Length: 440
Ligand code: PLP
Image 1 (tube, rainbow, N blue to C red):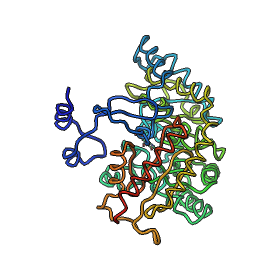
Image 2: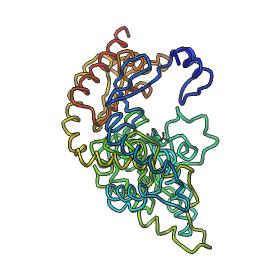
Image 3: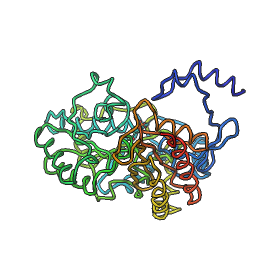
Image 4: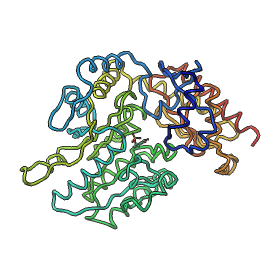
């Protein structure tokens, strides 16, 4: 099929996420046809660096032979079989691997198929846990500028108004605490959390947060020690802690899981995105024995967790996830990140000197580059200037894919990116920023 024919089909029938379709219909879509390593190729033969890891998913590059082979081998057995009333080897093996890898104490793995459902599972499990303990707790505490996905529960605990404001009337009530990234100090951030816990003592199910960094909120880093302090507060106020590592999990922050940086075990750990190396939709909600045990009982007590999805624990996805973890282990991927993180820091410091680059926030191998109109006072470009969109569009023309979060340009390359590739990617991004901001 020619590109013109494809474009006509796509424009007649497709509806894209987070996209103003009128603009989309006026543009020329890029059809990605193949990928290799950190690059994607379109139907016209143009190549692009995948500098947002296909939406923060890809870990070891595209078409990794080991993951391809694992999925193909599983296809030779069975593509899917249900987890309701049956089980399978890749699902069992992966659960054991995740329990061994995750912060100590997270022993139970509940599968679903995407990050949002991993969050729904945690929220509902937390709610039901308290029911089993004879307590009617309905309140959740979440962080402003946090993002946890697009299903209604995940939207309820999400704090990025721009994304979900329109749905407010559909959502359950949540107590929002200001983003710790905006606090004057660690102490004041912790005090804000304590105030929220204190004001509804005995009514709160759980605190939910993205450990270390609020990704979709604009790559906003919490002060060091915040996660650990929130864990301590949750223990003191007898509240559960849900760590959303859908985006930060699998090496992005320089550790396998962000919680490791502060030695924290949450009551629930939500995983998705990089779990399958960015290959197939799979998510997991890990829980402790304390939670799991509260759901055990006689049949007639009706204590089961009544939640599940048709494709829960899909065997192909589990096989991909096992191969993903094998690569982490065999290639010592986490240890290998240290020099790459240092290189990205050096390269970003060069970008910092550009006249319209404000703050740069780097956590591990990912970064948010803030674009400002006036560096002297941090004044932003007007929203309608769409400066972030324009820079990313220019970068795309120059062979690099990434996404803006408003005025913040994200850089989330696959962990497998070599020093040479990282250098080239950031050089393109720098040029795109300089070119797009030169007249403003
Ligand atoms: N949680 C976080 C921290 C995320 O960044 C995302 C997606 O970006 C989600 C949850 C939702 O994941 P999904 O898009 O797979 O539903």
